[in-house]
Length: 109
Image (cartoon, rainbow, N blue to C red; front, side, top):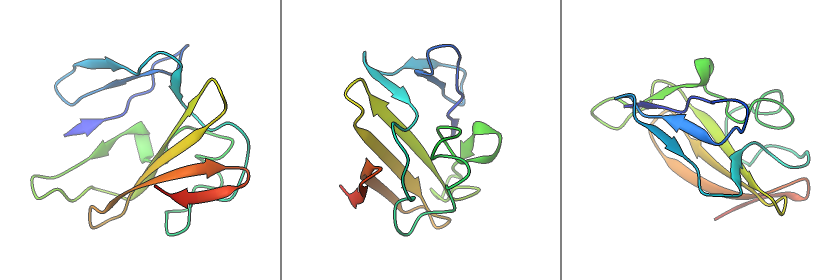
């Protein structure tokens, strides 16, 4: 399954592998409000997710194999109108973690 395909200008949509386009709920968009160190235990996101692209997967895409293992590790960042941030990280063995935070640091959900 391949997903995560940023659609400008609202930065609020992604596309599933079958071409279905999904819009995030009102007030939620891909990105990070404020700067900060990456969540502990995640891939290197300093140059990508924080202050850059809202995800760190190459080609803006992550593909999961039938055994639930992704082709690469990475993160997806979401923010809302209040400036609250969430991150979802996936490591190379398929472990998915949720993070909350940003400039003041990141905490596991």
